[in-house]
Image (tube, rainbow, N blue to C red; front, side, top):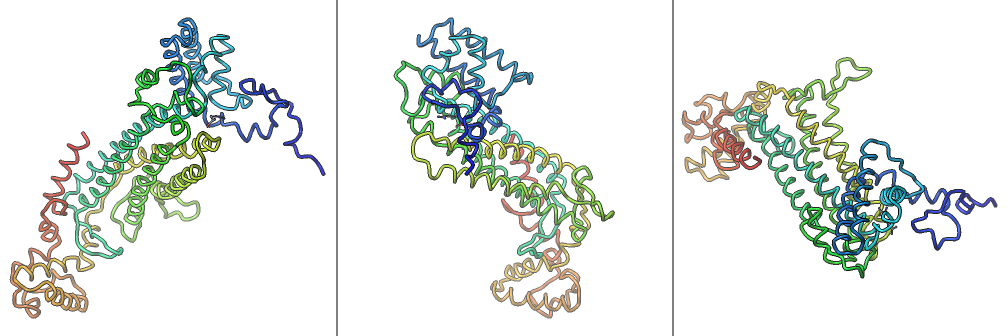
Length: 470
Ligand code: ARG
């Protein structure tokens, strides 16, 4: 039997950072399997930020000399510039972002570079990097949500009294205003923003000082490092600090809920823009054509938002599954947190940006919306409520209106098209004033309480919303 390549002696160099106890170099395939530099180099800027804070603390505490601190600072700043200029050479042999940067530092400044890792482990280092990155990313998501909310408010403001059919079971139920409908998504996004802001509080704690898992015997000052890095405090248990990734799970869960909201919104945009509905038109720049059917204009952007929601939901399940079997403390499994997390952030950030822009490019066909609201006896409940206000018990009113609707179906007309004499055959309580509630405008105007669809209420809701987000 042929020995597989895993067992062959690898040709490559040993990893000098930890290979002292190893009698042969790691196999090439294993190196590829275990290396994370291809994706965790994404954290470089935060890795350097963390190292600078750590080195300064070591200096202040007298753990390393001031001279070493200066050399480390100078070296790390040069490395940051190299990375930003795209001139840094990332080596798979050096496994991950941390060892790549540390090796470069040592090549530049010698022994001082080798002292940087005093009182630190990659375990608390990587947890710190991810938290710093996630904090900045969360702020980006919050800005993205804010921009999208502004787009929603701008569109809702134009349509406080545009009437459309409100649906239940995808069937015409009662008339609503388009502004009111849009404001439902504003509310969802408001809660999404709350979720991200709340998650940020738990992200913003410092793991450094936990070291490999048990803390350190050096006289470190964790509060000082926390302050330098803008953390609200330190992780209070070293085992927990290096091992849990619940903050990443929370961020991804908040992302999955946000994407789910946008997926529902997308489903509506797709329906509304289909020729069957023809309520809206999405600007051409957000659509594509078909290579075979010349007449088509496909709503690709909302369809992809709906599709990408599946991807983010998948990342959430990946992270939960990643965590569930891990004993304390750090395990290499945790290296697998990054790709789902990075991809979640990329997906959410670009989706928010494109969505805000897409809403600005929506044209509304008010006549079609209004016509559709006329097609399902949307004011039947209003007629029942009218009778109740004239003292008929609600159950009886419901019954009377059902018979009126049956009559209108037979005639093929809306309730508001029935004459007073015709209506009075069903109940003599009905008077001329009934037309105030049978019209679409009368129906929406009557829902005049907080949370209702009346144009005056929608206007107020938009005002409150603007105040809230600004
Ligand atoms: N690349 C590793 C990660 O992302 C860094 C920590 C490695 N720690 C270790 N003990 N091997 O988790």
